[in-house]
Length: 617
Image (cartoon, rainbow, N blue to C red; front, side):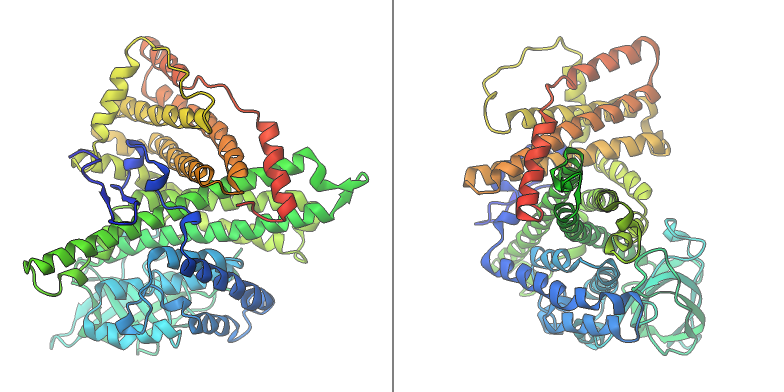
C-alpha cells in the first residue's frame, strides 16, 4: 500500500490526515497542513482565555506554588477547572467538553508559563484522565470522570518503579484475585507519581499473578495504599512527586481498568498523548522564556547602549525564536493531523450508520487511541525536539542575563532547572530516539509505510551520474529552503538504506545509529513543518510572513549541517574502504548547497523580536 493511498482528506477541511511518518516520503502543500494561522475565532478566544489565565492566576501564584504552600496548587487547578480547561478531553456525557485536539493543544500551550503548574495540569488531564476516558467501563466513567473534570479529585498515574523506568514491562507490583473473585489484592511500590501527594484517584499498573500486565483504579484512602513523602527535586519543585506503597491493598474487581493482561495498550497509548502534550508545554514555556530574554536584553545597558543591539545577543534571540518556530509549527501540524484523522473516522462511522451496517452506535465508536497511535512517531519527535529546544532557550536566557540569571531572585534560574526534567519523563529522549527509527522501520516491514521502496529509489538514484538540475524554481520564495528539505530527505533515506543493508534485522541493536537516523528524521519533520507554514503565510500575505521566511532560512542552514554530520557518522559506522569513499561522495553531492546569509537573517529575526518584545509570529 503506498502512502498516498493511506492518506485521507477530511471533507471541507483541506487538511490531509496523512499516514504517520509519511512526511519522510511525501511532500505537502500549504493547504494540506494545519498551522496556528488556521485557528478559527472560537479557538483564538480559547487561546486568549488561556493566556489571560496564565497572566492573572498562575504567575501571581508562582511563589506560593513553588513553596508548596498547602492548597496553592489545588486552588489554581480548580480555577482552571472553572474555565473548563481540565474538562477539554472528557466527553460531554461525563461532565466534560469533548473539544477538538487543537483546542486542547491551545490550552496546554498558553498556560505553560510555570513548569510546576503545567506538569501537574498535564499529568491530570493527560496520563491520569485519558486511560479512563478511553478504556473505562460506563460505571467507571460516570463515577470518576465528573470529579476529574471539576478537579474535585486530582488524578495521578503510577507506572514507573525503582527498578523499571524505561523498561516499563518489567514492573514488580503484583495483583491477585481473592478466592471469592470479588477483589484484587495489590502489593508493590510505585515511583515518581506526579500529583502523588494530592491525588484522589490513582491509575496503577500491576501484573496479575505475576504475568498479566494490567491497570487498576485506586481511590485515595483505600486500605493498604500509602502515599510516601514528597521528593525534593532539582526542578518543578512546586509539583507534587511522591512514591506509592501498596501493601495488601484491596480494591473491588470492578476497578480493573480495561482487560486483564492488556494494560500495556493503556500504558503505551496514553504515553503517545503524554509525549505530544509535553512537546506542546515546551513550546509554551519557551515562548515565555524568550519574551523574558528579549525584555532583559532591551533593558540592560553596557558600553553605553542596550545589549539587545549587540550581534551576539541578537544571535541568541534569533536562535531561540527559530527553534521555537519549528517546534510550534510541528505541534499544530500534528494536532491538525490528529483532528483530521478522528473526524475522518467519525464520518466513516456515520456512513456506516446510514448504510445500517453496524447499527446506530458506529459513528460514536471511534477508536481514539488507535487513531492517535498512527502518529506515534510524530509525538516522539515533538517530545525530543521540544524538550531540547526548551533546554536551549533556557540556557540562552541565563547567558543573556549573565550573573543575574544565575540567582534565585530572577525566574531564569528556575526556568533552567525546570527544563531538565522534560528530557527524562514520558520516556527519556534516548528511548524516544529509538522509538522514532524503530517505529518507522517496523511500519516499513509490515507494509504500512512504503519506506523500503523509497529507500530503494534514492539508492538507485544515487548510483546514477549526477544530473544538472533546472534553475526554473530559483528566485521563487523559499526555493532554496525547499531544495534543502528535498536533499535532507534523501540523506535520511540514503543513510537508512546503508544502515539497513549493513545490519539488516540487527539494526535495532545499533542504538547510536538508530539515534542518528532519528535526529535526521526529526529534522525533516521540523524543516518541512516550518517551510510549509512560511509558504502558507506568504501566500496569505500575512505581516509575519517575512520573519517566518527568515526563520525558515536559518533553520534550513542548521538542518543541512546537522543532517550531513549525522549521515556522515552513520556511513562511517556502516562501511570502510572504497565503499565508504563512494558513500561519502554521494553524501557530499546531496549536501551541496549555497548557504544563506545567516548573519543577515539572524539580525532580521532578532530585530523583529526586539521591536515586538516577544516571539515574532
